[in-house]
Length: 156
Image 1 (cartoon, helix red, strand yellow):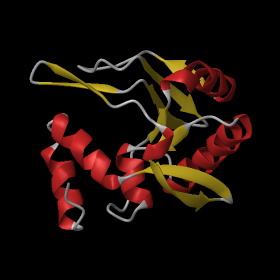
Image 2: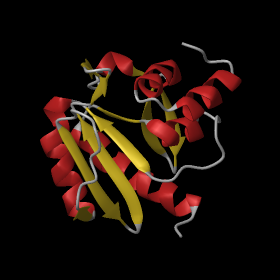
Image 3: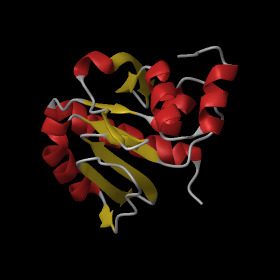
């Protein structure tokens, strides 16, 4: 099992490469909740990337790790790739879209959705708004994640 510190080291390595290239990206999902103090740990690194930067992001991740067979699920996301970088699972999500009750919701990362930054090992980590992720979790039917967010007082 990979330690939290090892996962954060991979995040910093990815951040350096993405920031150097000027990509529009942000962390999402449980990693976002971890960085904001909502949860004590995270399973993997979910990298949200603007649809327009997805091809470059994929190249960056291929240079750092191994592409894995996809376990995509029931989303309409344009660019979903799973990698292992230094033993850490990294999901790249570009052109994010969620299907809920037969409707497709466009959740692609836009620069205006990056509302703050964290520092991890000296690297600047862009983060989306937790309230936005509350909406995403609601659309995905992830009631437990919505409850975690609500318990900290960030309703949507």
